[in-house]
Image 1 (tube, one colour):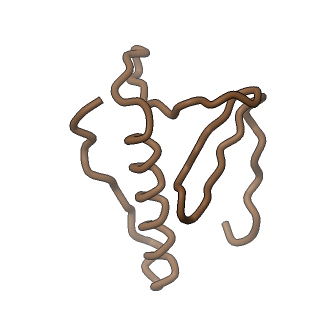
Image 2: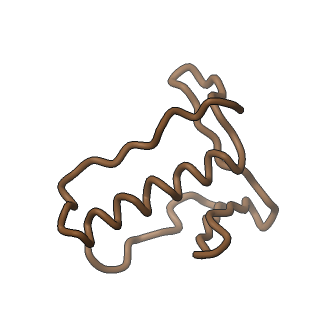
Length: 82
């Protein structure tokens, strides 16, 4: 997992991360939103709140790795509103 990770696996989708802006998504060059879908396809959460939650969880995981706690699982809290 150390080193540059492969990206570009989803045709037309670009996920960007800027340290002071958070995550953003485009699809074929147009703004898009991240969403969480249930197994049945039901939309559970969508939009900026999902992006902030994903970013915070990834950052907390990386920080644990840097502290030598990389073996720990990092979970977010439940998203309460859509």
